[in-house]
Length: 133
Image (tube, rainbow, N blue to C red; front, side):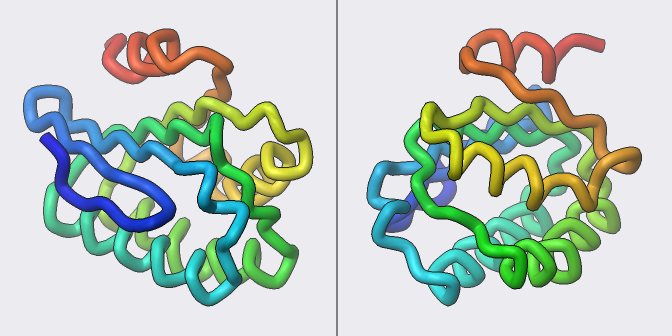
């Protein structure tokens, strides 16, 4: 079920799988640092509301290069919340745009060791990995 949509992404929740799926839109190319932070804080709100343990990020169309300053902000304001809220496993379907892909990976590094993370180039493979025990 769709639980949120913005100009940049939409979010779906599957209660049976305890899974939130994020689908990033190509409009992320127009994103500013401020817009990115607002989107991330909305995502944290969704995690609080739906108490999920699994996250699938479909970032194939993600086009926003996350700067080191924003990566640092993300580590403090998002990654710590994900851990505190009980997120256990995340699958990230990466963008074809190498710069965006690298900034996503760097933004996720802070969580390494606390949240099991894998990168995929196929949404179904990512979903299958997330729901495997």
